[in-house]
Image (tube, rainbow, N blue to C red; front, side, top):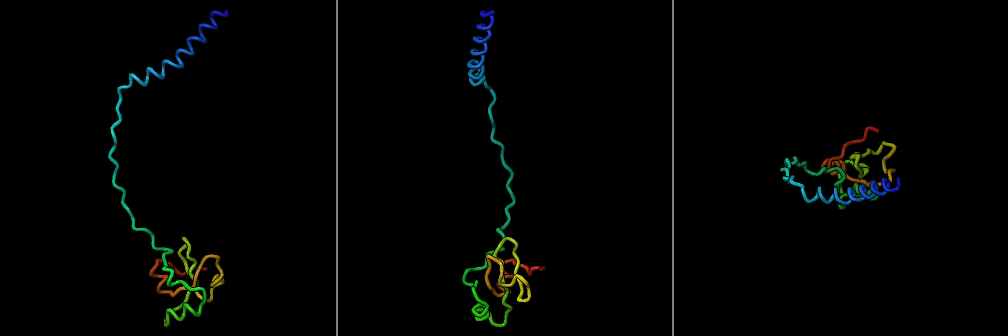
Length: 114
């Protein structure tokens, strides 16, 4: 019984070493690079791209920058929304700035529904 066990162990060790080596040397398949389809590229989203020069910390400085335009609170986030002065979030979100409404619209922002 021991010789049978030893021969099986020896055989499995040989197969463990020889089969991967044999497969690596006798491989006849070659890989051909596949031409990739051109991906339709979209222009980068303009949301959140309000220039720093058009962002203000106070309503008065924003109003001085854009006379005759409405000052809104832009969230400056991926949501792409801005809030009017009557909104409960006007001036209260963590990341935001006072901006002119025309600048917010030009950057792709929309009026919040809340």
